[in-house]
Image (cartoon, rainbow, N blue to C red):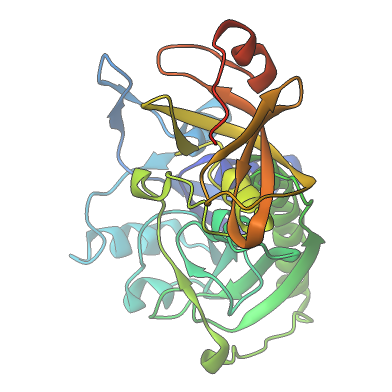
Length: 307
């Protein structure tokens, strides 16, 4: 099967690596244009581009998809199928019509739930117990195509988005391999999504970082887990903004207002939240300092427990 692969970040690179390892005929890779990164603002390659170059696969980085040029290029490559994984662009209908088997996509949710960006993070932020990956045929609208296969996995109670990302990345690559094999064999299923059950999610930004202590302990802990590795949850302490990396449940009760400090010691910083319950912040980062255990921070910076 002759493949044109379209993707950009690490999540996509894992799928491309799987196709390379399985000896697929990869005609070319399409990825987003190089972007300036870090303080030096030097142009850097996407993970997909670097992997393709390392394996002598031709790389294309069109800035436009709807002027017909990219479609004509794909026609010249004569692909049997387009494989799209976190490419970051919506393909025009005329491009989807080029390959023999159309175009398929790997999406990091159990469709139709969590269409759009950041489905992994929102599954954690919303406290879901199960998530997974889906393969589907691409359609005109984002993430609306017929589903081919899904694979489920449980979300650990204290699993961060970054940790879940790493697991789903591998699951997605495996599911892609299975999907391509069955499409070529003519036995891949095809199930229309129930659009009435669809939900959409957006990209994260730093406005989500402040912890809302009026939430339940589980909602707060899931918020802390869901915002890692970026943008990271934050809290105010001694008039400064701290990043919060981990917290745990307690058996304590309090009549203090949500957000009040209930205790501080060897276990961490205990803070009141909704319903008179508390959570224990166990790992944080002070401004300009390294990430550390909350108990270690307290040793050098005593915290006054609020009355």
